[in-house]
Amino acid sequence: MNDKPRYTFHYTPAEHFLTFGPSEGYTPPHFAEEGFIHCTDGAGNMAAVANRFYKDDPRDFLVLYIDKTRVKSPIKYEDPGEIYPHIYGPLNQDAIVDKRPASREPDGTFMVMPEPTAF
Image (tube, rainbow, N blue to C red; front, side, top):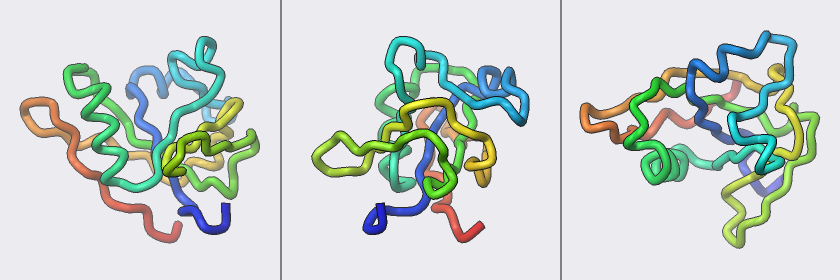
C-alpha cells in the first residue's frame, strides 16, 4: 500500500452508522451479502461513486475518512485502477480519523468532499 493514498473514503447512511457504539466494529448495511466494505480513494472518485449509487436516495449520509494504516481487517484492491479498496472484515472505528455529513446539491447530487489532510 506504500504507493497508494493513506486515506480512503466510505459513504454510509447516517442512521445506520449511528447504530454502532464507538468500540464496535462497523459494517455497512449489505456486509453480510457482500463480505467486505466498499471504499474509494480520492475525493473526486468518491463523489462519482456516491452519485452513481446514492443520488436518488434522500437519506442523510456520512463520509468516513479512513486511515488505511490503522485498519485491522485485510484490505485488498481488486480493480485494475486500484482506487477501490475493499476491507474484508469489520472496520475498527479507531481507523476512522474523521466523519462528516455528506454535502449535497438540492437535486441530491453529492459534492466533492475535502481531501483528507494529515490527522
